[in-house]
Length: 239
Image (tube, rainbow, N blue to C red; front, side):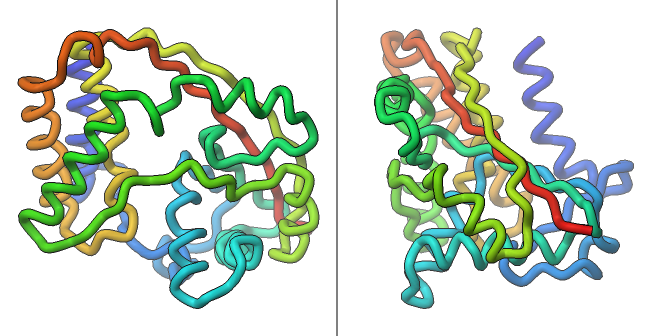
């Protein structure tokens, strides 16, 4: 059942481009306009994706991570209606919980996707296939803290957003064995952030990586416990 649900989830992204009720729009978070997405939104949710454009933008224009974070948040703010809400999640590996050092270290020791052998293998193989088939170099993600909790209220204010609050959830995945590989496959679209390829081709690469890993990953990797310490942040655009 899980396999069918995950395959349907990924397949729906293709189906939506062929007349399904949900429309998928590909674009650059730093340049997308309200007109491209059908107008300003009352709610925007971003799941484990901001850790891609923030460092990339920082390196591209030579600014500090904090300034790049403000740029990305300002872009999102421009897509919200007055009083619109923007919430985003990020793995604990990208969050600096400087208000509670002991808790921060505890979260870092959890076996998150950045370090789990199955998720790491999926990311690595997707990168290799991008290089082999299209000459695109895709480095592995690093657990560099991008979001310092104590600084977020001020940085959000600079971006035109009001910081509402945050929480952290530590989830224990029920997936083991082949189901864990399917979960990594379902999460694989995040490995294509910033990659300029058709959606169909991205899914072909992800599927090829999944099939190869199914035949090569050892049982100890597939059965390794997977916890997901995730921060949730809430902001809103003032009225």
